[in-house]
Image (cartoon, rainbow, N blue to C red; front, side, top):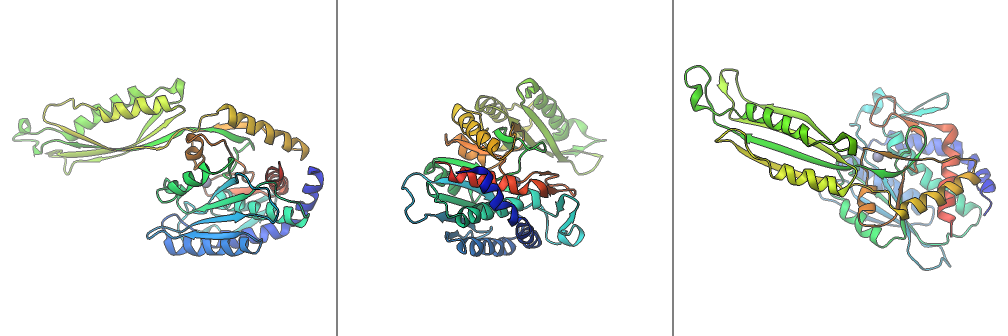
Length: 381
Ligand SMILES: [Zn+2]
């Protein structure tokens, strides 16, 4: 397959891609709005059915449906499919579009969720459209999962993602690349915990000796938590939320903290997790309880992931792309698939910047080449 001619086929799609992208951005899809999410999933299902995909919706009682699309072209060699992962929820509440409408400014297309990751949905569709248009044959089955809850930790999609990944040759995650355009071959693991401290209330003036301050205890625990971090290994612990107490003249009976953990290795995940579970009170009479755990295991750059990256990097050269590899402290659904041993390459979405921020945008001039790259991977024997 001549990659140059694939790119020439996809370039003229650009106006149509932007048109579809505008529709997708205008259909807002925050992680917590079931009706909006279900509507979005149906819209995507219809678009891909049009391309000949078999679609299957997995409804969720309180969340948006998960959607699986399968391409089994006539005559396609049987074998393990290639799995594409897209999430279709965003961090933006309904109504954001009124303040930050879809718009084009120079080379930028802006709008809520455009970069993370609605542009990726358009790329997946038009990569397949390009393949069909040139009459090429997919060398292996292709499955695409559109999931509804990545931005809230994938509680109702994780099982399906892992189940599909286990049956697949490898996994491509259509999260955006780094701001410099690098693909992602490693991601930190992510943990989330809530530490609750129970002390004993008392009058701060007349009977302070009868009280045990949950706030003082929490302060000690927070200092201890900081000592567990290991910046050299990339292990970070952030106490991002604390609350407790009722009034300044009452010794606080309760306090709690929300903790974010990031680690590069399963060993570090285990070290911190067991330390958190083994926390001991400093003050007598205090009760500590910890909830939560490792939500996304680290995506470790294995030999298989490295090989996959090298292969894709070479394809990039055929398209005039100099692809670098990068890593990030942020998790994605690729963490799940990599952790169960399925080679996973992440960051195959659109070039741009500002995910989860008001300046969220993609770069239009890179859209064709990145879409052609995706098509090239799908066509690679
Ligand atoms: Zn994302």
